[in-house]
Amino acid sequence: MSSPTLGALELTILLAVARLGDEAYGLAVRRDVSARTGRDYSVGAIYTTLERLETKGFVVTRMTEPLPTRGGRSRRQFTVTAAGQRAIRHAERVAMSVWAGVGTSLNPEPA
Amino acid sequence: MSDSSAPRRAELILDALGADTYLREVVIGDLAEEFALRVKWDGPVAARRWYYRESLRAVPYLLRDWWRGLRRNDVGYLAGVLALSSMSLIALEYVLQLMVKRTLGVPLEILARSGEAGSVVLAALMLSWTLIDGAFAGYVAARLGRRAPLPSALSLGVAWMGLMILAQGHAVPLWFRAANAATLMAGIFAGGVIRACRASARTVTTALE
Image (tube, rainbow over all chains, first blue to last red):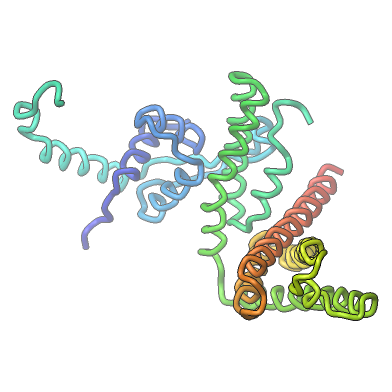
């Protein structure tokens, strides 16, 4: 059986979760992704994608204790699983293979 | 309410959208946390503006989560809520029709489309009544649909909008049918929001006691 595939936003968010480590929760992920892509993603879009990643087995979640800074609500923290790490490596190999040889044939400043 | 605490009404509305508890908690929590940061960076006015915009953007996702989480028994419960709140809507409408007929001797709808002087005023009166009628039914729907107050009210609004546009017939001008249906939807939504805010505010007060 083939492993679940990753969409572009899924990969971006999975990489953010991997990068943020113990600080990977919705708000931090959203800010990281928005800063790197230059797009303002809504909190709903981030959580929908994170839930999809969880369903695919690429991340696991746990709820923290309620925090006063969140009006007494908990954070939902995400951690990349072994399957998620394999998916990242696979996506990296695919990207390198797809991009191979392109750099030399492109103009430095396309019109 | 301090400047750094998130707009309470918007939080209550998001809370009443019937999404899964975990999703609601983290979405509202994230918004509250970032709101507090933005108050420091940009000031309370800009932070509030940001909060309302982000809350609006979160609504489709929360509604979608409610929709996806619907089970067969939830659908049955929702149908019951719609039936009961529709009955309250019809009862209130019937009382109005009766009152107008007894007072003026003619049904309000006939007066409104008679073209006589003052029919515009009557049409405006009818729309105002539709608004009150809708608010009452929306409140009832949200009250009965405790698991998802706002989706219950919105479902009632969608069902009645369709019915009003289709069932009023061609004798009533299209603009009036459309205005009446839109007014009813607005009333139902307002009633649902009022109920959602009241119910959640009471829950919070009880929890704090």
